[in-house]
Amino acid sequence: MKFRSKYEANIASNLKKLKIVFGFETEKLDYTVPEKPHTYTPDFVIVRSDKTKLYIEAKGYLDALTRKKMIFVKNSNPTLDIRFMFMQDNPIRKGSKTYYSDWALKNGFKCTIGKDLPLEWLKK
Image (cartoon, rainbow, N blue to C red; front, side):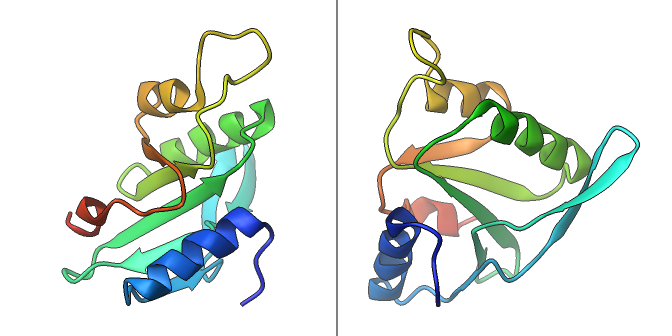
């Protein structure tokens, strides 16, 4: 598998060590920016033992366009379990008191910091 970042590669390595079967950028999800259809490719797709899917987006940097896009993706796919893994919990912009985790939780995304997948995420 070819990853777009070392962070994604580290997450994949940890998933493999845990013997967790996953796909990397194997699916495309449709979403709509008002009146304009788009597709989004989640970084990781894990099928849990109960056959439900967990979508993980790995981010070292969370810019404004990505934040906006991910809200559109969530609104267009409200039943999907999309979560974030952040390399670090940085402020969303210089001088901001809002951190990546604050933004994620405020917008209904579960998240974690670092390269280790929380094993409780594997349970629905």
